[in-house]
Image 1 (cartoon, rainbow, N blue to C red):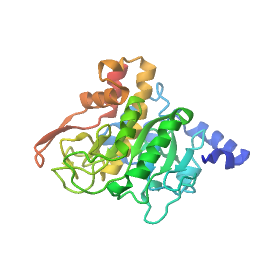
Image 2 (cartoon, rainbow, N blue to C red):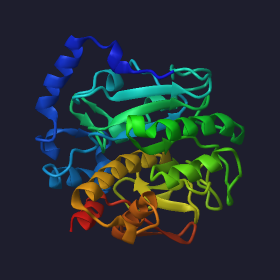
Image 3 (cartoon, helix red, strand yellow):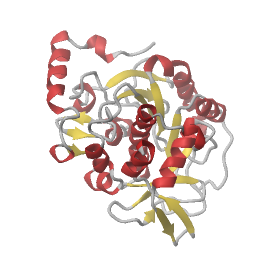
Length: 326
C-alpha cells in the first residue's frame, strides 16, 4: 500500500498552501530566506547558487528524493505544512512492516529530520532543493544499524526501483550508519539493488560516519554503487569525522548525515541544470550519477587531510552549476 498525504488534506488547506507559496517561491532573493544550515550552505555555496540561478532553476520542482531511514513523524509542520505549491511528502512506505505507515518504532528517531537540509520549505526556512518532494521510506528500526538490517534496506531499495517512475524519484538518501570501520565492502542483499539503481540513473549516497576513523567508513557507505559522503568543518576546509579512500566527496556539516543530505539536495539542482542546459553528461561518466559526481569533483576545491594522508574534493554547488551552464 502507498500513503498519499494529499488525499487526506482538505481542499481548503491545499488552497491556502498554494496561495502562500506564491509569496515565497523563486522570486525571493537568497538574503530574504533562512537556509536550513546557514554556515554549511554558505561554505558549499548553496546560497550563492540560489541567487545566481533564481531565474533558471526551479530548485527541485518535479523531482522526488527518497529518504531511506528509520521512519518519520509526518505530522511535523516541516512535512505537513510546506510553503510549496504541492505537499512536501509525496508518498511513504514501511519496508520493515510492509505497510504505508513510516512512523518511528522502537529506537527510531533520525528520519524525521534527515530531510530538512535537502528539502525543507517551511516559514521561510529552506533546504537545498526546497521545491522538491520526498518519499519517506522506513527501512529499518534505527539509523544506527547493523549489517543484518540489509534485508529490510534491500526491500526499501526495491520499492524505489519499482516506483521511481510513478513518483519521479531521482535520488536516494541512504541514511543509516553501522558505526564501524570498514576498509572493504561487506556483501549483502543491498548490493544488487544498488547496482540496478545506478543503471536506472538514480543517485544513491550514504554518510561515511561520525567518529574519527581513518582506516574505513560505515556500512552501507562502503558498498559499491553507493557514493560515500564525508565532512569538513563548516567555514573551514578541514576534513574530520570518518574518512577513507572510499569517500567520494566531502561537504561542510556538523555530521556526515547532514553532509549527505546537503549533497542529495545538490544532486537535484545539478540534474535539473543538466536537463535545462543540454549539457552532454556522457562526456563525464558512463551513467548520470557517475557523471554528476565527476562534475562535483571537477569543480570542487581540493582539501588535503593530514590524518589520512588523502586529498578529497569538497562540494561547491555554484561552481558545479556554472560548469554545466557554461
